[in-house]
Length: 158
Image 1 (tube, rainbow, N blue to C red):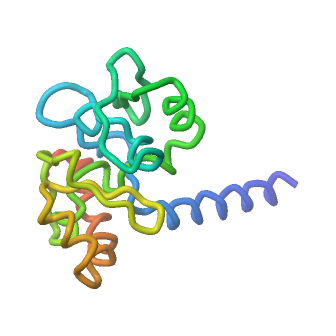
Image 2: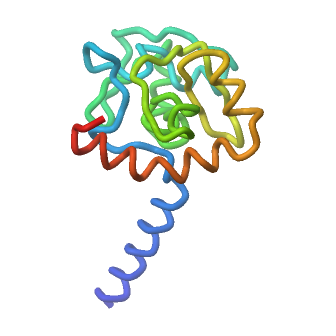
């Protein structure tokens, strides 16, 4: 019975890793140049619920993947806490368009974002946000590049 349960757990974890391949793990979240705050303090849930970038509050925060995530209200915090994978930006909050070209940039603009197929993509600027949305294959290239970039981030060489 234990072997059967272990196999089920392995399959679930493998499928989760494939489904959420663009997401980051500890050490890969873009915290900016200073501090330990994701998305420069912007509320990740607001992109989905309000369809706009909204600055969160340092008084309403949650620690996930070794990073503080800030929110505009307790409802947003609770939504994120219950399902962070649903709201967290792809590629650890690094510029999605940059990842599609095989590089990362810590300097993102929280106003330069897109939600595509239910996933949040942050970018360096509005031009990059347009590219990730409009250039065919951009997200697919980012998905292909992310494992190598993720390895470099974990090794501290990016």
